[in-house]
Image (cartoon, rainbow, N blue to C red; front, side):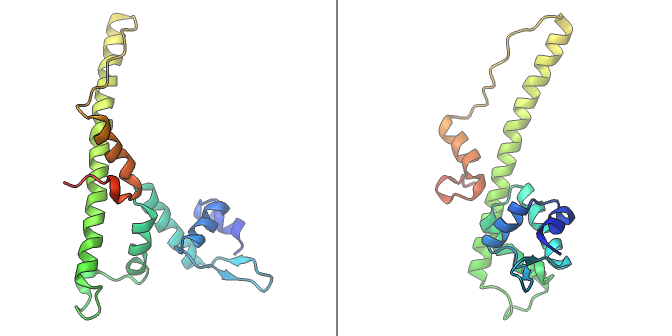
Length: 162
């Protein structure tokens, strides 16, 4: 199917599909005229990519994870001789864990902000007037906030290690 049809089928824009190709995440076929030809397995792969991106996983880690997702390989079912070098696998899993930890930290920050706003709305509803907005002091200094929020794209220089 052509890129417009693939876009409708996957929910990804044509621009996103081209970007996934540029990043090496997908490899669509080509028609004789050079137009991209997306098969159903490529559309399925795009759906997986979109899901991983929506979870906040950086493209770099998605690129590393896709080969095992594509062939249905389960790390526990692979014979040791066929598996990725254990050091590389451990490094990859450490990076995924670090990403998960950053997401958890971001969720905690957002939950605290949500709770403060919920309390504000309760107070505003009770009093009938608008009280001043509460400061959203989350006991995080600016450097920590930047490391937590800025490292969501896999920048190892700003990653928070736990």
